[in-house]
Length: 231
Length: 231
DNA sequence: AGGTCACTGTTTGCATACAATAGACGAACT
DNA sequence: AGTTCGTCTATTGTATGCAAACAGTGACCT
Image (cartoon, rainbow over all chains, first blue to last red; front, side, top):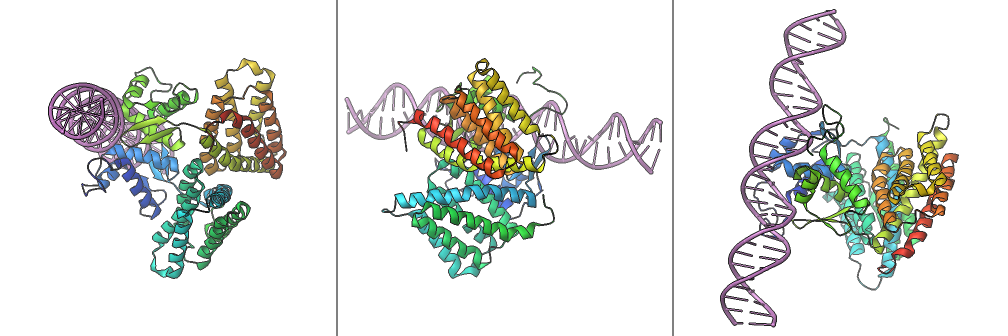
């Protein structure tokens, strides 16, 4: 992390190294550079990122809490593995939280319909970008856009507790998508159109149903690719 | 932590200090010794617990991820505050996850009805203990028993992702209960009887409804005590 | 041949030391 | 009197050093 002026190096507005490290490790895990099961050696990471082991260790605690790492005391940290069983677990939780997020977001859309809705407009922009030039983005970029869109829904709810729980969940989902990725299929994106429209309509019931439908649909698309190691 | 033989000091089977510290800090927060808003000074905690700042800092990252601490870069860590708005947020999420947990637990009960169910028997034992001698426990103990019972439901599901998300949520609920505690009311406990019976019956729909009903009931009992700072 | 034991390198756990920043206090200036 | 600036202290951020534990290797015994 060498003094390359980390986006506001001096003075006041710079992030602690633990946050930069956590962000970078997340990226390396999500894009597959650090594959599932890979062992993380603190010294190597420290050297790789040009920091001491201390920020590394703190970042490891954060990523552990987010579920990206499996840590065993005195035996090291490993990139978490996501087998079919765990993917099923994830979808079961997501099937509870995504409809909730959509419902609360729709309520917000209804409450604050008069003023501008930065969340919905950004969501629509992402969707437009992807659908107008679907081939101009790499898989990683597509996954990131997908994550941003779902994160926006949760952020729109204004429920800070839901946000804290759901954002890591969405990132975990991005990871899964990245590994077995149907993000190239046009259907995968057009579905979001319905979801966003439902939220924007301000009808909580409709939005909840759309959220549920969306998760079920994604699960149905991904499940077949995960067989073999069933629960 | 001075060589006071910290419960398995030598050899192999001892927890890292960060875990002991995190557990202790959680306890101090939950029992009110560290009140909401309190600033945590790393040096003081280190001296108080007899360790260096390093395990303290790692524990802080963990508790931050669990939502017990609010951390601002270079300005310190503070015990999180739970106002009425945030309590509402918590209940909204809980209203999604608790029924899910009950439903999946019931499914497990049905699947594995032949062999013994350590989870349900432990739950029933807790309930019996509380109801036979309701006055013999302190508030903190009651809160801990309540937490254990709900944690058992989630653990029973076998869904590791749900467990990872829900256990901290339950603890956060314990915190709320501890602050405005209706745990002395007999109704609060008899309700759990229905919930456990529903899970044990193996009927997912019934259990889900019981879980939902329970959360709604608790919210109804707590909500009035939180007024003033509504959303 | 198989298993057990000691030995050694690697890695994690913890402590200490130093650097940098935030916030408070007070002096000087207007 | 109020404001601004500098200084000083408490506290967080980061680095380094050392101890303890794990994992692999090979010798030795049975």
